[in-house]
Image (cartoon, rainbow, N blue to C red; front, side, top):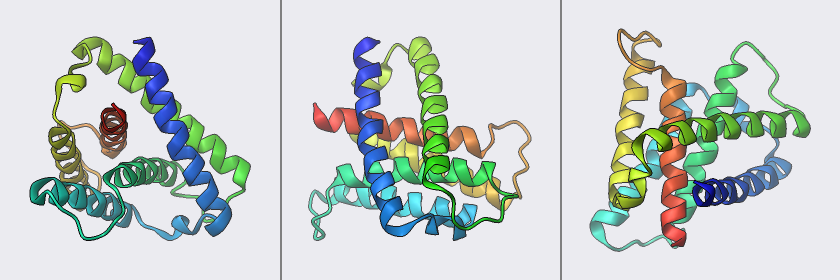
Length: 178
């Protein structure tokens, strides 16, 4: 588990560094995005990964690793937006956003550790394409929950789905390094 923990931390650190650099460039322009728009941004990235996996080629030079980083950061933005849904500020202070980023990265890592305990690191034996498909499945679940105005009868809410997508993307980054 120590290896997974440090690999996870390294992947999140890579994502956070890019996120915070972009925040310095753009501020918190993402505060304008509605939950459904964030879900669609994650969908676009996951769909591009699947398309490249299936075609075996790509015409845009942006690598798949960058798409997984984008999914991770959009998942964290989504979790932040859900927490701040009644907060009308469009610009948030750098330090506050960094704290929120850390909060959700830690919560999601804890979820990964709990699931990893129960599943015995099964993700290590999965294909990268399966992780992509699981992300897309979670996106479609979130879209359905959003279409149902957040109401579920027997399912986890959108937060759990964002955390799962984030964790699948971290696993993909770890596998891409190996």
